[in-house]
Structure formats: structure tokens, C-alpha cells
Image 1: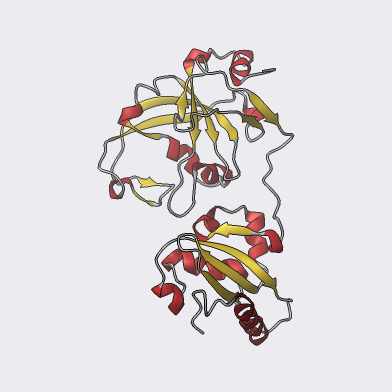
Image 2: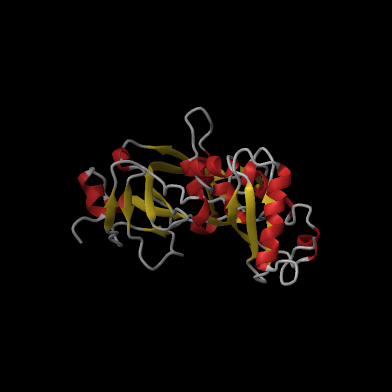
Length: 283
């Protein structure tokens, strides 16, 4: 190990025993994660990531007894990315009316447990590495609170700037409907700009459904209907066993293609894939 995160803390003048390592990795049913809260934060809006991590279960109180937290997030593509050093102080318990930014509902709707509230403030320590430094967390992914004086975390990558994976192209794009909300903005922009024919595959039963996107918001606009009600108004999907769907693109239509032409292409794909006979299409 050439350099560990513990070494970096010492070089910054921080005593490792005064720091706790937090790896935020929870995922909501809608596919949102602390990584998305961190990635999408803006200077002109409340910091939802900071708000999220400032609330912790009472059971973690003894583990979090340290003046500084080194926060990390877990992108959907894997890895552990440095999100900053925060000064942390417990200030009481949480108002049950507090809106959990990850789930978008009052915390009382999710749990009856008493939760601690911490006052957190990002410090300047190691700020030049935020969004650029990746560590190897190790096999204990469930142990999301750890001590740098007891666990040396190897630094595995340091990039010039924070960047996300580029859009893979329409032909190679695949995602679960539950994860659409967490896609990078460059991806959602590309999916909104294109119309055509797509494929849904039930994650649970592996049944297929061929559909078309003809509206102004393209593929993304059509798919959001499935994330809202699970069926988007389709008879076959209404009768299917509830569950998530993997979505991919079969054909991108030209910008001048009419709704009639796109639906005609949809019918061709239904014939090719036999999605009426062996899938969830009913027309």
C-alpha cells in the first residue's frame, strides 16, 4: 500500500482517532441514494446530502462519537468516493415531521425509532480531494462506520476532476425503471431528446413488453409513467406480477418521424420478439 487514507489524514494534521469513516450507501425504492443527493447538490439550494447524514439511529451513537466525520458515497457503478470532512456534534433527537431527503416523506412514516440529530459542517480539510479520491473500503460493506486508526483504507485512484461515466449510447443503454431518477443529467437529457421503440423486461418473471415513446419528453418521459404506477396504463402490465422492469432501446426514430411511423416500427418489433405470444403485449 503506497498511501492510505489514514496517511492522508495525518498529512492534513488530523489525528485518525478523532475521525470516523462513513460510507453512505442506502438506496431508496425509487433508486435514489446518498450519492445522488451529494452529486446533485447546488449552492443555491439546501444541501440535502448534509441533511441526510445529519440524522442517525440511536444505535450508532457510540460509533459516531468523534468530532470529525470523513464521508464517502457509493456510486451505482461501484467504488467508494470521498465526499468531504465534516465537523459533527450531536444536538438532540429528530422531529418526526422531518422530511427524509432520500425518501421524500416524513421520517415518522418510515420508522417509529428515535433518531439522533447532529449538527454537521463541512471543514476545509482535504477539500481539494472531494469527488476525486477513491478508496478501497474492503469486504465489510455493511460496516459503514469505521475507524481510520484501526482500518487502513488504501487510496486506489485520484482523478483530475469529478466525472461520471459518459452516456453509453442508445444501443447500449440499459437501466431498471426504479433507477431512472438517479441517472446523470447528461443521460436524462439524451433520453428525453430521442423517441422510438423500447423493451421492458420484468426483473421478476423475465417476460418482455415492447413499447414506443412518441411524446415530447422522449423515452424518459414514457418510462417515468412506469416508475409512478408500475404499468403506464398498459393492459398487459396491469395484469402482470408487480415488480421492477429493466428497460432498453430497440430503435431510435429520426427527428422527423411521425407518431404513426413510430407505432408502425413498434408493431414490427412485437412480431420479431413474439411479445404478444410469449410476452406482455396485448395488442
